Amino acid sequence: MRSFMSNLVESVFVSMCFLIVTSQAKVHDVTGLTSLNTKLTEAGNDKLVVVYFHANWCGPCKTIKPQIVDLAEEVPDVEFFKVNVDENEDIAKEYQISNLPTFVFLKASKKVDQFSGANF
Image (cartoon, rainbow, N blue to C red):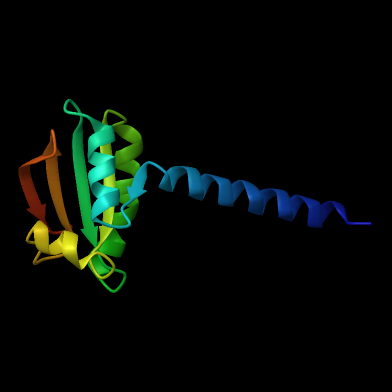
């Protein structure tokens, strides 16, 4: 029979995992150019889309990631997508990404602005 403490620890762990997964869900992973184009089409012409270009080895990308997740939760009318440049070199090339992190702002699938850096 499991002890009260082990049940409590398991319950807390499951709750924490759920919170991490649901908070991350506001920033959608892009897994390829087709994935990005599908997500942009689904976003429609009226929504602002922020595409966050990052890499696993990028220190500033790791630093700013929690702020991006928070911002995505605070601004539900904006779609947030994240693109790992090492896994999606074709997308990084198409958007001419040369610095990380980079944020590309799109409206109706057209670039309206771009910002690079972790200071905002």
